[in-house]
Image 1: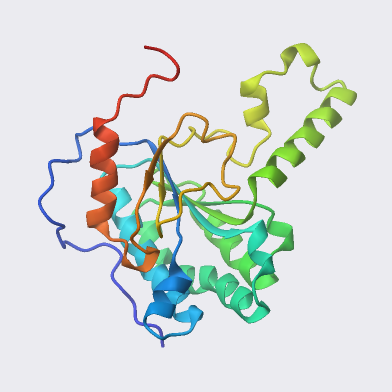
Image 2: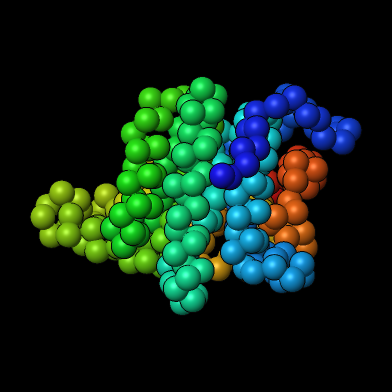
Length: 253
């Protein structure tokens, strides 16, 4: 039986200048990288790293709620991840159900709204059913929106958006004159959401890996060598504190 880690408790991180009234990013996106390397360094199978990574999700969701982040988007499984060995893919795609089976009641009680971005149709039925159930159960919640990017690829998203735009133009539902950046955004998986203010990537890599390419145009980036299973509220606060000190000019002076 999986051990349940309390999602919401009273533990405190190290002292921080940041508080709930500070300048907090409205939308944080995270590329959760380093599960396999974490396991390899410990002589454990890659599966163990993915399992431990779920525990980190629990901690960071708790921190996001604590600091009143409005949207948290987690890159859980990319369109490129299908290239991995089948046993690893099967294990990863069972983790959403395991996570939600344990923590959904607590998420509901804390007003979290769950959403999924990506091509759900290609996911196995056990993944689709688990996340759809969570989406339906939390639809009316008004707290943190927790987005899981599952079978997500930004180029695939943009290509699909282009096809839908052309279809609507051909069907006279949209004109060329009406087409602008705001219209394009309405055809993306993230329609209706604010663009990310802050992107965090763990694991030492410094690339976007086909994640939210349109949405990250003016996002602040924060990279860390810490592997995802070791990422804690302390590192999360480091990212928030650096974001607080940055000047966002959006092309201005």
